[in-house]
Image (cartoon, rainbow, N blue to C red; front, side, top):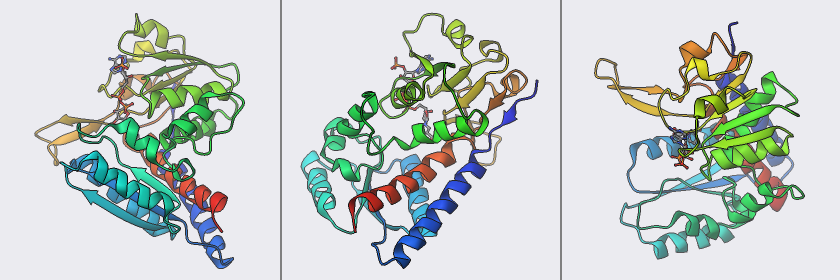
Length: 292
Ligand code: NAP
């Protein structure tokens, strides 16, 4: 079997095009321009690239964006003041604080300060709680998790009853993804570093989502024939003879799994582009829900 390679770039482009059209229509109807504020603390090169890409995406779709870059040694009070201003700024519908934050700033406290109606990353405890509760609809679903579900739906529109395994239990990827799959009626197992016999658990999966941040963790013989494999990992592996001195790898042995799975996402070009596309969608949603 040769797996379908799920083209995240193409699916993300389709979503961005839809958002771009909706933004134009909104503005033509005399409504406000959707606005996104990004906040970056420190000089982490990967975070700088992520923020730049988010701003570029806004620009292309007609979404207003403003970026705040604060020094590495910023204290909690300074960041709190900025977020409080953005929480009430009428031109800002979405606020994104780029993670990770430097160690002197408590991430959970910062995420909890964002106005939950502007929480386009979906990490505020109210949104996380609503995602966890079967009876409630979250205002925003975390972008990577929402993107993962869209990729799965491109090859499997209904996942009811499927056995899903998620490797990773972080609050930003693993846990919300597991909850989202469960809300969509999959039977979900969450794995982490204390999981016993990870390979055997993975072999049960019809749907395997890997978000460990561990290059090529999942081998071909961990995958059930015909499974759908979503590789979330982005790992920089030093490779002196490559043009950049490093290459990006995922959390799976793609070359082995491509001959076993029904479908798989590549790295790069799988989940990555979806995260930004879903952020654009959440920003539009914030504007259309909460402002004139
Ligand atoms: P994280 O906070 O470091 O969490 C990693 C999770 O994986 C933890 O729950 C950890 O278990 C588990 N884990 C790590 N190594 C494992 C192993 N060998 N066996 C079993 N479980 C293991 O990372 P994250 O923020 O969730 O991100 C995960 C990966 O996704 C990273 O490569 C990141 O760059 C990537 N990512 C990609 C996107 C995108 O848009 N494509 C977005 C966000 C993140 P414990 O809880 O026991 O420590």
